[in-house]
Amino acid sequence: MSVETKLPYDKEYINQFSKDNNEPEWMNSLRLQALGQIETLELPKPDKTKIGKWNFSRFKHLAEGEKISSLKELPVALEGFLDEENIPENLLIQRNHSVAYATLSEELKEQGVIFTDIFTALQEHEDLVRRYYMKDAVSVDEHRLTALHAALMNGGIFVYVPKNVEVKVPLQVIFWQEDPEAALFNHVLVVADENSSLTYVENYISYNETEETLANVVTEVIAQNNAKISFGAVDNFAAGTTVYNNRRGVAYRDATIDWALGQMNEGNTVSENITHLVGDNSLSNAKTVSVGRGKQTQNFTAKIVHFGKNSEGYILQHGVMKDSATSIFNGIGKIEHGASKSNAEQESRVLMLSEKARGDANPILLIDEDDVTAGHAASVGRVDPLQLYYLMSRGITQAEAERLVIHGFLAPVVNQLPIESVKNQLTEVIERKVY
Image (cartoon, rainbow, N blue to C red; front, top):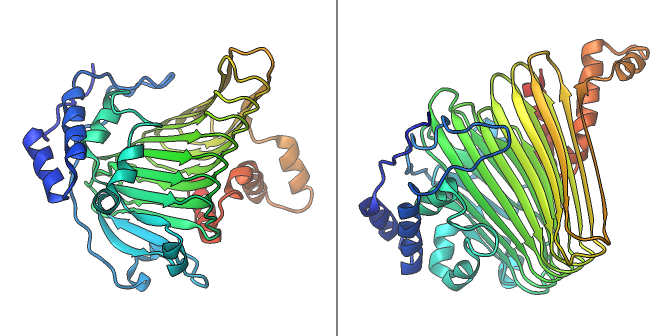
């Protein structure tokens, strides 16, 4: 038995929504094409996770958010994402489906950097958006949820860094789901042109503990020849939000895409983080941490596919499970025929804090080329009693010793986040979820 997936949104609604947002004709056509495919496509089939009864159809599609004139108007919970002593020059806050606050330094504007919401980008930078939107990374017809996303996209960000431009200060985005029933169909499109670089960090936050809604997020990260993109994120959706998060990267010749993802959702979650190393000498590091608690079910897949010669892909997944939470961690390295001299490495480790918690760590290598290097490691277990004994022998209580071990276990990803306030916020979320 599967959950009812018939949407209360039809062709007439899509046409009006597109018109209200002054979208170009090709975007309206893409939406309508996707709408027609939703019922014919199947749901994705994440490994060992049944999502047929999850909520993908009960939500509010549109919820406006008020603008703020100053960051002092933010609620306390959001202030923690910002460094009070170093207010970010490059910041965008999306409140429900509206831009509440946006700023970009004059220096970056003069260099041609684009950092704006997706609807403004469609109006002011149509050709650039059309060139990359759901083409190189994610396709509309991959499955029902990608088609649903394409039809109902209602927010998101567009970032473009021109050739030979180095963005030295991080670009930060906060996605604030203030309305407890508002669904986020965010589309994040980050493009670094040849010989450019940037760091992008995003935060998702909501408070709907009981109200049901959906987050169907698609992210496309494109690194052209010799470009470098560092992508950091902290996802913190409340228990009422069912999450499908598809983060996809494409790296061309000599390009690098690094991911540091803190996945701290309270509700059921499917997360895909896939990078295609298309060019020779391309590189990706994909690092993920997660803490599961309560009765939530989570499925995390990190996959790096090697097409280019001498490409390197490294996957690190660390998860902590407590209560009756269940999580699957798949780390997949695939080396295609012709990708000689490539290297694929995976490490998936799960720490269990209670008897009823369940974790499954699956490092997978799929190799169609002979002249390559590859390796993997996996472990599922409880806190090492020898580590606890060592710490407690120094006068530390058992509770504090466990806390130190857990933070040390998650540190390889937490420490990769480039914004200190975001790193501290993730640490606070981990503390709250574990204790």
